[in-house]
Amino acid sequence: MTESLIEITDLTKIYGTGAIAVHALRGVSATVARGEFVAVMGPSGSGKSTLMNILGCLDRPTSGTYVLGGEDVSRLSKNRLAGVRNRQIGFVFQSYNLLPKSTAARNVMLPLLYNGHQHLTDGECHERAVSALELVGLGDRTHHRPNELSGGQQQRVAIARALVNDPSLILADEPTGNLDTQSSEEIIELLHKLHDQGVTIVMVTHEPGIADHAERVIHFLDGQIVSDKLNGAKRKGGKL
Image 1 (cartoon, one colour):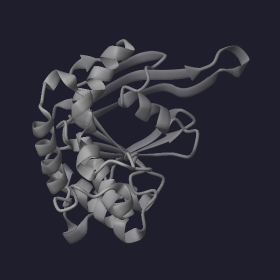
Image 2 (cartoon, one colour):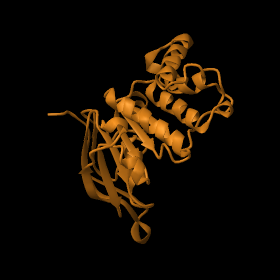
Image 3 (cartoon, one colour):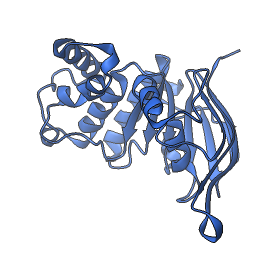
Image 4 (tube, helix red, strand yellow):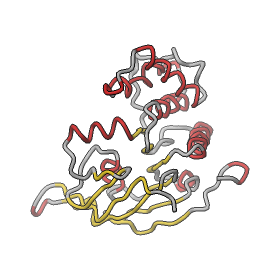
């Protein structure tokens, strides 16, 4: 039986109180196994972004439990959540979130610099950043700044940054949202490559064609899961 990486049980998230209370999540339960590639879909306001914030340890649920890698992180303090986030989670955003004046290598190094418990030297951090850039096919772009890279290359830098700490989980929020068709296909193929290597990926997307590449698709509506189905994911050559 495959080991679960994520276990969420009866998660609720309420913003505000009384008449203005917004129920963003309403008793959501699900598991994600280690090594799974899961897409999360739903209209604006459906709860998928709230879920991603909780999965990313950026927020805590109002009630319910979230177990990540065997540890209940539902009620951890902000400082302890930050530690879990730095050690175990890599983030990929639609807007890349790169520092414009820093090189690709320096951008990829950032999680290592924040993760002080590893006590790596600057040289060791740089070596790990270069290795991550090589993994995403940008070993020859280590000294380039974001304005010297295409959108697809910038997103590859962002993926390298997400990978540099060797996280348990990659959370990708609309990773192809700002890209043209060819760049989108390249990023999805890279995610497939990482998945093939055993990386666990949870990806939010509003594009059915992108969700088709995940092995499982979870649909949200009004703060609840309305469907959770295996997808028979497609990729080039007909292989997952």
